[in-house]
Length: 233
Image (cartoon, rainbow, N blue to C red):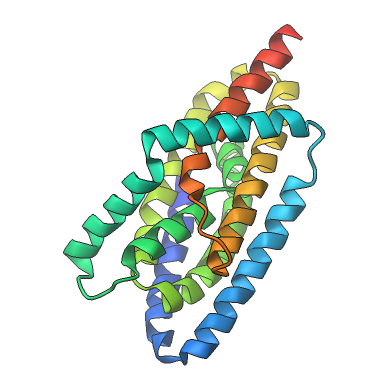
């Protein structure tokens, strides 16, 4: 089944979120400490991804242009409104619902593992990378739900849709992309993703309030730049 990896990943988040609701009675101090631990881990992961760049100027340009586009489109505002809509319908007494939805969606969606895993699934039917990601996301969903509430559970839907679409597209189009270009694109996505993951980690630790969602267009801009550079330079 071509979408099995994405389905398992989504179910792992649901399972972790349900387990997290049971652990919500733990002390606020414990929640805060564990959440900050997750934040530290996310920052380290982001650093590992971001520091592998050989084209920092191109990454910086893409990041700035993406931020301009994201602010113009008000992506962060839109995601928060969607989260609030879900909160009003499914968790009226949970003030952290929107924050949980947006934060967990960004953590689970951004990063090279989901993209590479989805491409592997679409091209070869190998879901091992997505299974590994599912285990990681499931454990993280436990603590995110304990700290931020039921909104984390609903992040399983954008994760499934996002990875599922990549898998389906990969199964059709990846065979037409030169392997050298594919390697370059995956490296660039990992680098941009690493920077955004660092921002997410800082937000989780409540050190900053960066509108990370508004940087998402930078991924598309970088792909365009790298494709043009490969084809014409």
